[in-house]
Length: 118
Image 1 (cartoon, rainbow, N blue to C red):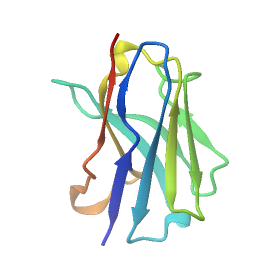
Image 2 (tube, rainbow, N blue to C red; image 1 turned 180 degrees about the vertical axis):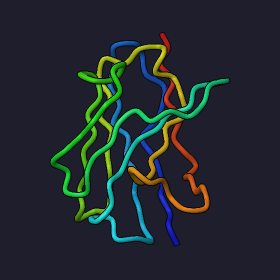
Image 3 (cartoon, rainbow, N blue to C red; image 1 turned 120 degrees about the horizontal axis):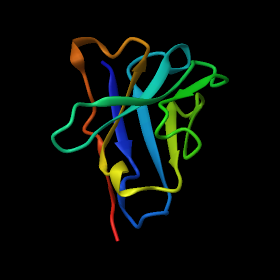
Image 4 (tube, helix red, strand yellow; image 1 turned 90 degrees about the vertical axis):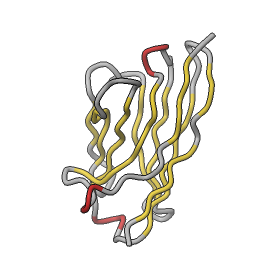
């Protein structure tokens, strides 16, 4: 069955960087678009970046464009999110999922916590 494991989160100072990873299994990774979501406290989960199956096309929401970079390694069944110039408002739990259709049965991994604070 589908499984994703997000990792790479942590505590970082404003202006710092983190690289998140999402290791996937249980489906043909190279055939599926992937995405990153985040959920801040008391806010809804929101889509922030997506990448097509081959990795040549990406999209971002306005508030992360130019600071975050989504990429993937199909040989490793892993999607990444490089986050630079982090701000306090980037503090959230980060999740990966398939794109444009999310995983069936509303499956989500455990997420990885990013905290941006001095």
